[in-house]
Length: 178
Image 1: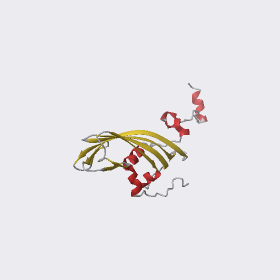
Image 2 (image 1 turned 60 degrees about the vertical axis):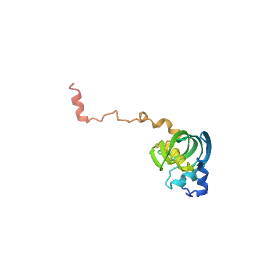
Image 3 (image 1 turned 180 degrees about the vertical axis):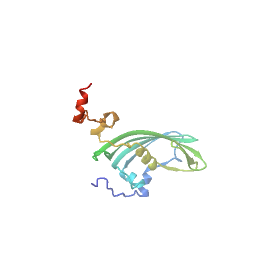
Image 4 (image 1 turned 90 degrees about the horizontal axis):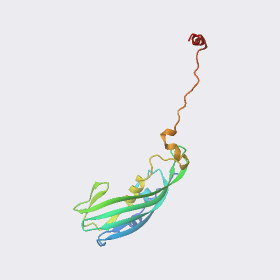
């Protein structure tokens, strides 16, 4: 079954540029951006993905001030996964939002998952890698087909034990002594 086989065509730089936000030309205010994406974006960053036919939209609200850029990513998307138990293909839909702050500084560095320092002279931020990461973080580790949704609870597993005990017939005489 090669439903997960992909041709892993890397996006060229021109296609990645459609995820650029030109921050230097923005006024200190609120700005909105919209980016459509598909499997090509994910294949660009990894050749070992275990999902396919992903697609979606990322709405970005950006608030620019003198000191920083406040990004809110709102991602609506879908991806096809393979069930861990049945190996059936199923569609997983997601709707998530994530915030990240970019503070202006002397050099680029990651402070935490939610804060980065960028060079104050930087004119463009490409958000493709961030969309990729936020999307990946929302794919469940345990992948169960929707038909099994009630079976992911440990309480639903029943361990059956035998209730009839086989007793050596010679010991039956001892039971009569009670």
